[in-house]
Length: 238
Image (tube, rainbow, N blue to C red; front, side, top):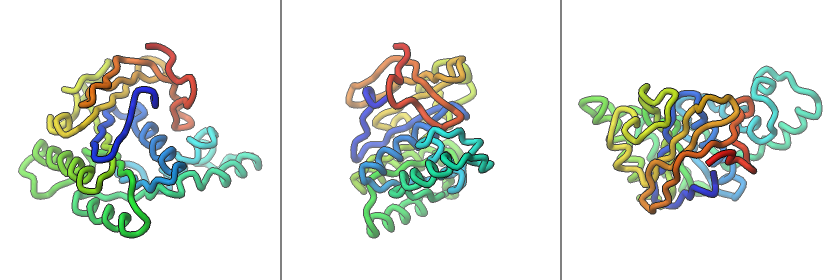
C-alpha cells in the first residue's frame, strides 16, 4: 500500500470500511511503522481495550496468530518473540478519548511531554458531542475537529470510519461514508477497504486525494489471524 499512499502533516486521512474488513489492522500497521521511525503516536482506540490493541500489535509484528497470544498458547520460542517485539509500539500511546475536548487535551499533554507526531482515531463514529442537535451534525463536528487538530498541531491525523450497509460485499464509494457527508468534505484523502470474496485478500482504493494521487481498485494480501497486511509483494492484482 505504501506505493500508493502518503500521509503528510496537517492532513486528515480517512480509512473507510465495513466492520471486520481490516481498517484497524491497516491503521495499526501505520502506527507501528511510525513508532519504529521514532514518531510518537496517539492511538485513540474506542472499540478495543489497550490490552487488546497491544496483543494485536504483537501478533502483527511476530506473525504469531492472535488467538495463540490471547489464550497464551505459546511455545517457548514464541514467548521470546513476543517479548522481543513488545517494544515495537514503545512510541504508541493507546488511550480512549471519547470526546473532542478530551482528545485535544490528550494531544496537548503528549506534545508537552515528549512530542506528538501522529493521531489515529478508531473510529470516528464512536466519538460523541453532546452539544450536537442530531447525529449528522455530531459526526460532522467530530470530523471537522479532527481536521483542525491536524492543522493546529501540524501533524497528520487518521480517522477510521464505518461505511453504510449498502457497501457490504461490493466496492464502496464516497457516498457510503456513514452518517455525514462532512467526512468526505473534510478529508484530504479517503482510503477504502472491503471484503472481496477471499479470506486472504482485501480490496483497496484511494477514493479521494486532493493531491491527485487516486488509484483504482487493487487487491492486497491480508491475514486476519495476524492482524496484518503483507509488507512485501502485497499487490496481487490491479
